[in-house]
Length: 227
Image (cartoon, rainbow, N blue to C red; front, top):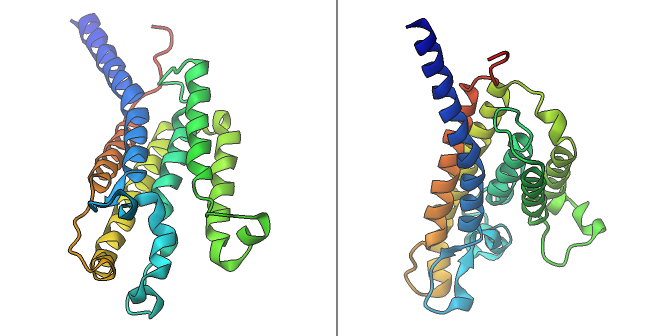
């Protein structure tokens, strides 16, 4: 009975690790797809607004320029930061046993997500201005995490999982909440009642799944030794 119970426990943890192995990267990719997708639906494709565009777009809204609505503009970039850091954090986790080629692919995704924080027509001098300083720091943080990803894998699972869960949860709450605050102003600007696009929901589901993956990682165990 004792041997059977031990085998069942080990099988359970292996099943959880297999779930995590695919849940974390798939959730991250779904989050990016939703973020890069349509957030403001419009019959004319050129007038649809992507989640990626909102950080720049909101600067030109009359309600924002007049100070009627105050928000954290850089908060619209939190999904990119969360996904980039998450991929760096889980790429080399020993519990997940990713092959080397997949680890490198995950780090490539982390780099792409980080570089999407760059504004249009950016220059090094422009990134040092007050307007873009937070984005520059976020890019530096994400790329540093990529470079030290094997070292970050030495952290305890509870620490890594908690960071992924917290980052993902904040990254879904802040931009979505701010988006619905500015959506009426965008409707006024378009002189047309607007609905939110598919990208908002897809990104939300992806980041909530990434949050769940982080929670599962906090309660996972290291690979069994001497089995």
